[in-house]
Every structure is written in C-alpha cells, then in structure tokens.
Length: 200
Image 1 (cartoon, rainbow, N blue to C red):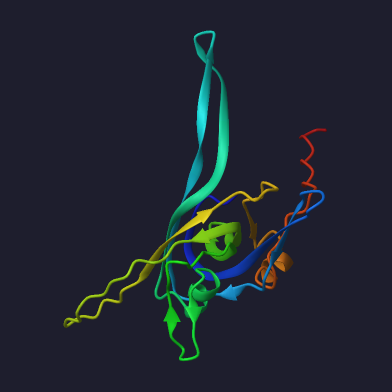
Image 2 (tube, helix red, strand yellow):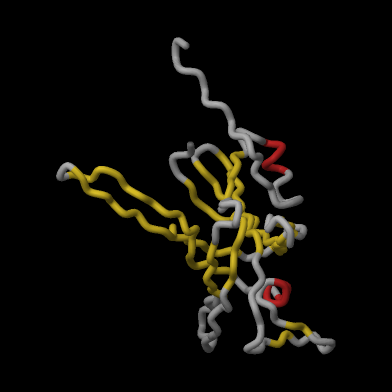
C-alpha cells in the first residue's frame, strides 16, 4: 500500500451503457473506448455514505456503515467539446456550434486517470460517474495573463453489482497498467488469496 500520492494526469473518459435483461433483471455494463480528456488541473473526490454506532453495555457495540460512492470537484484547463456532447448531452450542429438546452441530460461514464505514489505510478478507474455543467466566467486581461479553468462536479455511484472503482500500481502489474486505457478494466470475481501466515 503506497504511503503518499500526488499529481494528476492522463485523464480519460469512457461512455457507459447499461442494459437490463427483461426476463432476469440482470444488468450488463458496456463501455466505449476510453477517450483522452487533456488539461487536468485537480480533482478532489469526497467519500459519500454514513456510519451509525449501535450502543450496548454502555459502549459502542457495533457500527453499521454504508458506501454511497464519491462526489467532488474536477478542474480542467478547458472542457473539450466531445465531453459536452457525449457526456453532458449537448449538441453540435452543422455550423460547428455547440448548443446547450434545458432538455440536455448527462450520460453515465467511467473516469480513468493516473496519479504518482510513493510506490510509483498508479492508474485508477471510477466505474459509474455523472458530470455537472461547468461554471461559466472570464475576466479582462491585465499585464499578466492568468488562465481561467473549467470546474465541474463529478459524482461516482456504486453500480448495481456494487463496483465503485479500482486501481493498479505499475510496479505490481505492469501489463495491466500499460493496457489501462485500451478498455475499461473489469474486476475479476475471484479475489487474490491471502498470504500464508509466518511459520505456517
């Protein structure tokens, strides 16, 4: 487990399509090819959920917890047109004008990105995300030009199969790390076996 992490780069997004079987009710998740989202500045995702202590014998006897995913701010240099059309539901007409209307609906997607850690580079995927429209604004230019950024809110929700996110360290699985952006990684159903106890 890395001790620290820092930096943000190689942000990608992949459109998510959910299909429900009319007979069994089973949900199938299909992702498009991840597409680069350049200009990442910062991201801060806060855990969503709650913990409720149960008291007995004059002390905390048990704590119930719920995991509702994450939500937080994402800042980029400029939101690409393809993000606005594919993920925010806006349209681009034949005159190459991007149009926003009150009928636009955001589209779920997977967010992929890379951070540096004390154990080397790590790549992450948040499986089921929704994006909000970025704030709008600018300012007159002065003798020093400070770029204005686009800021939006990303909400990461648990899928119906409870998957929320995954990550991999380059030092531990270099092949998976290098192929991270070719398609959205799906978690195997079997977990790695626990290491044997010392002396066992």
